[in-house]
Image 1 (cartoon, rainbow, N blue to C red):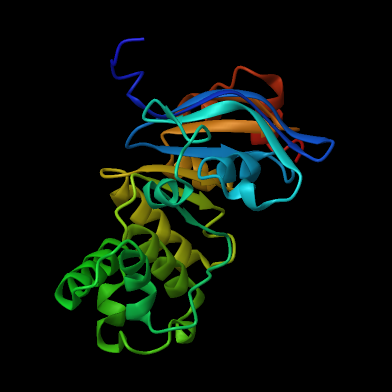
Image 2 (image 1 turned 90 degrees about the vertical axis):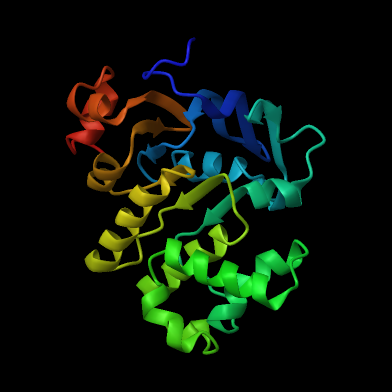
Length: 257
């Protein structure tokens, strides 16, 4: 496959990936390439495996008891499961969750926390990272005068942008977002969608969303999941306008799910 416009470089390659929780098989033979510097959306009904796959991309599922996998996930061609340093992996592949989860500390320390754990201690360096990350997350102007106040005093939409800034502070290459706007009002949702649009220039973004309009608005590629399998995966415009699989069409037109 040459690197023409239809096939940009794969940032993440998922190969014949199965995942079990105990005896329950949550993912079946997933094979897909996630392109670099694009937004890829995972859609599908609840419990279909999209969040499970998302969490496998930075090994969050390692934290779940009785979780077994087979197959592989490659980041820039190298396995993330075979002899990979998980802390380093999670620096390269950041994550934003459904519910904003700021640390119970100041706005400044929320952002400085990650860089500090990776060895950056100089105050001027940390100041710079904090400002840059908050600017990238489009929230600097709202918080610059209260950086020493608790992050827990912010609104939900602000907290979610703070969590994005916190993820950006360690310079990730990939950002995983698990329904990042499902707990937010429409205005905050719009801000986060705009933000994703700007970040795609520098990052590979994978977003799980229940909101099909959101997937259609912001993603370059969409994967439709059903019962732990990828039913269809392609350019977002094609998936939404001319899906090849009848089940994809039924889901998108609201006939089930």
